[in-house]
Amino acid sequence: MACRGLCCCGPGAAALNEDNARFALLAALIALYMLCGAAVFSALEQPGERQARDRWRARFDDFSLRHNLSAAELRGFLAQYELAYVAGVRVHDLRPRWDFPGAFYFVGTVVSTIGFGMTTPATITGKLFLIFYGLIGCAGTILFFNLFLERLITIIAYVMKSCHERQLRRKGALPQDIRQASGNAEVDSLAGWKPSVYYVMLILCLASLIISCCASAMYSPMEGWSYFDSLYFCFVAFSTIGFGDLVSSQNGQYDNFGFYRFGNFVFILMGVCCIYSLFNVISIVIKQSINWILKKLECTCQRCQRKLFRTRRNVVVPGIARSQHNISIESDGVLESETDGRRMSGEMISMKDLLASNKVSLAIMQKQLSDSANGFPRQMSTVSRQNGFAGGVGALGIMNNRLAETSTDR
Image 1 (cartoon, rainbow, N blue to C red):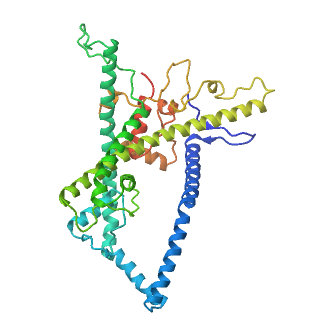
Image 2: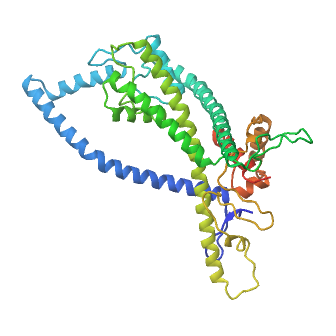
Image 3: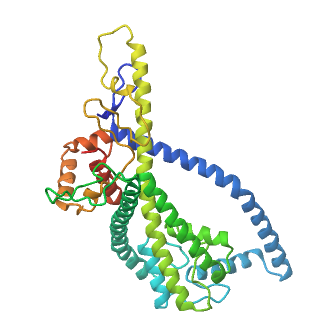
């Protein structure tokens, strides 16, 4: 049984709730991750920024002297161009931004939360409409991604089960006819088998990589980008980061523009769906790692407690006996028990449960919200408590529910 709290060393220290400890640890790790990223990007990009600024200042002063323009007058002209740039005016001729195809491309970047920024509403009416339009559109698209994730995981698990059955048949461990002759009841030949979450993550990684490589092969000649820049654009677009430094389908003229526009739409849709699914699976692995870290910290605290209370031989510290078992990341911190003989092995989805309908009940969600608002503790199943899986919202909640339901062999 998984421990419900994180013990702290020292007398008088209060035990932390496990969910709060997990949240605090994740927040600290994200903050550290951001600090490290900021340091790396600052070291990589700041020298180039300084060189570009120096070159621009030299160019600005030379242009001002050559054309006998004051610096203030030239800066005012450039400021007016910046305002026109926001509205869609560019130095080179580009296709219209707010014709129907351009507007459709814009709303696609809005509801998918990509938000390139190359096209933005300039009128107050357009900005107000965007607020309400994006509220419904983004929520609906996230729901679509969640439903896509459910079906994609189902397909992957079905394919993995078929491959596993084929391997067993080749080895002779699985009979060709899996129907019992006596009872005419279909035997669940793989009742204890569940595909590993790490294999699912690997498959999603390969699918995302294949889509990105194929899309880059299209973007590179059509947009005039290098292949690496095309890969960079694919990740920025598919992950919905959407910097806007590179944006597809913005030039004035293209060969076979209709086919290119359709291919651009298909690749972005497939890429966003796959990367979104991959992010959710990776988030499960990160959560397993956090649970593993918490267990390690708890074991360290318990060892400190044993040193502090070494003279008190009769004192029983909860959880110490269980902490003697090995803990691995794959098991999500689940401790082996000699009484029930069950252990999670990084496997994720039972096909018998997966192929059944798994609908989120609005009534259950409302009850959870009501209990939380009234201060009642959240009820979790025994399996969920043992495996350290909390509820979650959206795709993370869907994955957590399936992991909690299938993490032990029945």
